[in-house]
Length: 370
Ligand code: SF4
Image (cartoon, rainbow, N blue to C red):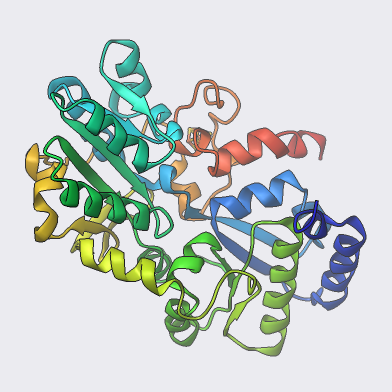
């Protein structure tokens, strides 16, 4: 299969592993944070960590859109589904994340709320057209990758004059989270592997601020195992040379400027929020989007007067520390005991991009075997 096998080639992987072993200085440690949950899963699925020398370690970051949404916002969605009688549409993983009192949208659905899993915001628009007598709400989440489709849907809804469609906007911004990690959270990492899909939209330019200000290399990488290994080698070479630059391993998709058309549509529909709460990071300034006044008629927060209250994570859940890169999933005493993908306690075990789900699915026996 062209364009996939090449990025999983065993001989090339061995060559990259040998190069990393040769070039990683045994007198120092290399701590590399992969911001994005997609990279975390690639690392575990393909055993990339096992191909690294002892002194090269991956730290998992907050780049899972389902994981970072705080419980208060999920409580809001539950209220909308249960008390306002809307048809609430969202992506599958989001429906399973435990909210306060371990309720979830899926449990609400089982109890009679009209909650529907959709594959895209287009599905939600179609449901709105098919149900003119019902309020249809799209519970929008995600980083810069999923934001443009939501913006397009809002433009379509306005053009069609849809009266029963609204968006509960929870789109968040990668550079703000990175800034927070390096300032308020003060993460102890030497370099970052930059997200691939996000960067295809925003480009590589926004990371230049971080390399210049915080002197940490950022290497944007694709999601295949050889992408991640090559990015690790590029980061190690920069660190050895004392450089801190933005490098683009994912040149087959990412440019410096990103997708200008998508960025323009997002700018037309959304503006920045002053502050937004992230699970694990707390309130982060300028880190999320809200719907502009021109589209206020489709803003669920206005239509339903939504007020978000902070709600604590489940007792003993270490998702917050994991999302900050301060702990690993196996450090949580609930991991694999009270918390599994079938019965998750925290968001990191739910999402297909969550770090706990990656450990459970691909690496949970590593520590036991050690
Ligand atoms: S194992 Fe479960 S409870 Fe523990 S940090 Fe992961 S998701 Fe949270």
